[in-house]
Length: 93
Image (cartoon, rainbow, N blue to C red; front, side, top):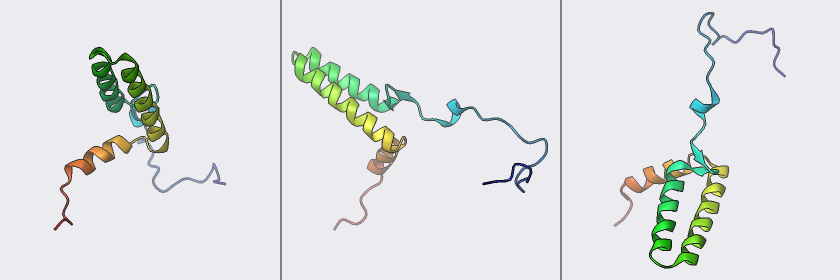
């Protein structure tokens, strides 16, 4: 356990600033990453408004559950997947 009276060498007097959790936590909508939730909701709405209401709802619910599970495991997983999709495959023949 750390001694509360011991100062860290990185602590500089006068340079302590509180950081709010909202600035460091990822933006989530219903537990899923915000861009993923918007894309999933748009896809589910397109399917539902095209006439397939039940499959649209099922796609929306299943996609949201997948997004929530993904965000619980790693909140930055969607951003990592987006970045990985942009990198060209260099090991192909």
